Length: 186
Length: 279
Image (tube, rainbow over all chains, first blue to last red; front, side):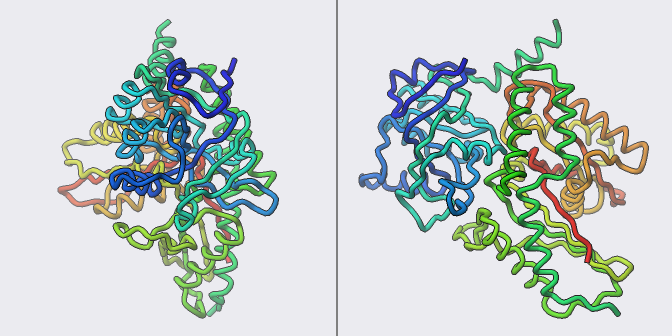
């Protein structure tokens, strides 16, 4: 049974989620990839204001294809998350509570998640057409010059994700693989 | 001598860019369905069902299967009896430019690897030329996503490392990649040649249909054994655990130097896209 999440996601709510939980996210989430993360962290370093409210925000690592006429967005599946590892601790310290991507994260990200209370969700990679159906509205809020990598504000409904790493550091990639291999021995 | 206008190449490349990104080849869909049937882990089966559902949504709606519509890798096999009128490379780039713009595909190419400004039209294409007997031109467009490209590796093994060294390296690359390249993956392996040739062969290996095995029994057995070892790792679809880590291991080989044993592993995600037309 999937857990329903309405964004914004507070640190307290994030701390209740456990690796392996299936969740359906509704509400506003923001998109950002490598180039946008780099710019956000440069602003932070300069002490300047960010173009989005990071507190309690969920950021989706995605660069969608262009929307066709009549569509809210084009195909929109997750990109590989480790490329954001250099930037995520900064945003988590500012209050980011949710990250959506796919693939492994570095120890510095997990440490920040444990310290501040944040959760790393996985969406199914290579399912961009399917996932785009959960996006009801998309608008660019910053860095339009980056094209697919611009920061977008998405309104999503029942966007399916699984908790990969929770705020205690439990990891579905490790636990899922171990459980499967153990099942073979039974 | 047969003449082909560069414009025909542009038109074909444009069409193939869109088709390849929205419609997966039959062999990939069949391998996913077969893997689903043989997958004992419930969570893994569920992921494979979503993946098949996604293929159908993309196919029916002419939508890109994946938002990473890739760098356009274009393989041209040009018959020696053909005269192409016009600039071949520019014809290919123009086809990519038109296909990615008209097909609502993502522009994912930066013009310089360090200064990183998007070219805005997904050019340049990565073009590979082959000369062949005959009077035809075979064009294959294979959009290559970088989630999987980034997990690829090459190693110059010693001849004494032998076939066991090759096996260990291939399995190690897949295990290190884990969930990152969107498993279930396709594993392209190039063995032999020079440093660059091995990498090229690994990429070529990804073009071979998944139900077509290497012509030599020795390498057929090696492909089967590697697939078995990879699927015993337990990584599973999306890395959540399960049997289906890879759909196929395709090996291409080439003669090499007495001192060398180059091995390249080019990984592709389950969205293994390629479309071919012959002019």
